[in-house]
Length: 111
Length: 115
Image (tube, rainbow over all chains, first blue to last red):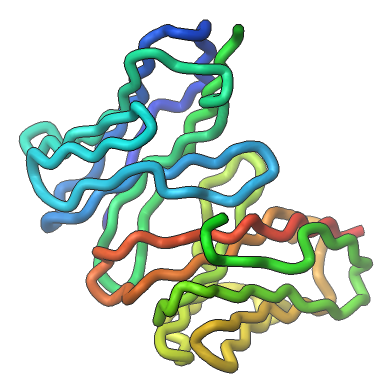
């Protein structure tokens, strides 16, 4: 079946550091890929998405590129801020209404 | 603000109580979802409705009973819950989930504690 694997974390960085959170997905079909973010006490918010190979999704300084050859969709940001502290979820679309989520990666950014 | 609201935000209930969670979406979407989010576990899809018809029921115990009276509203009726049902319950909606291509928009969740 469909699955998404992302780095477990937690990840702790200093402000202005470079962020990478790895995500790989099972290669069945050509799914859309998503990154969601969950701030403390809130629901999930869509951060960015990509719908086909080589697409780059970007939002709020975050980027991720759909890599079909490596079945990856790694999340990157060049300079993190304290306000980026949250849990990040990678997800893939599939058939029958389902999004398959990774387990989430907790990011803490210290001043 | 994602366009999906949930009430209540927090709920404490005993194991013999009956309560309901409410979700409303203001996005004109056709599909709505209930998820359970427990500490240290992946997000669990519970139910999916498309155009008010239930299209997915992921082996959820019968003490959870969903209801979708129209495409904007979704309820989760709870009765005789167990302490392990304590979790964050998230509602989501999407334009049309058939191809899995449409992103889902989540509400803020209801934090449920069963005592």
